[in-house]
Amino acid sequence: MFVLRLLLRRARGAARPPRRPHAAAPAVPAPAEDELFADRVRSELSDELPDEDLGQDLGDCLDQYHLGSKPRCEEVEYLELVQEAIDRIERGH
Image (cartoon, rainbow, N blue to C red):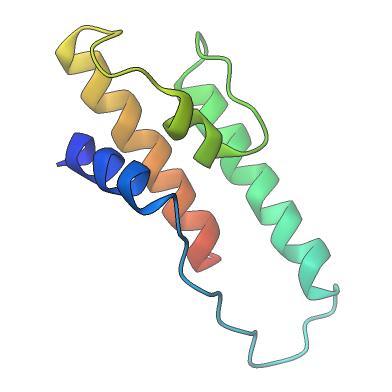
């Protein structure tokens, strides 16, 4: 499933859906709050994948990943975790 998502992402040129604006004005400006959340998600992912060299842009991690470079079970876990992190950042929670 996640390998298919990676292939589709590459085929579409990594187009991302537009983000929804926040309904209420938060205490912290939205870009700063979003960036803090994204940093926390990337930190959690780094804790789960300590041997991986993850950059600031997780989309690049998927785009530069070479299918078959890990054993199948590790590859699926890696792709799944990175994609879930990207989805969490895009959703904002």
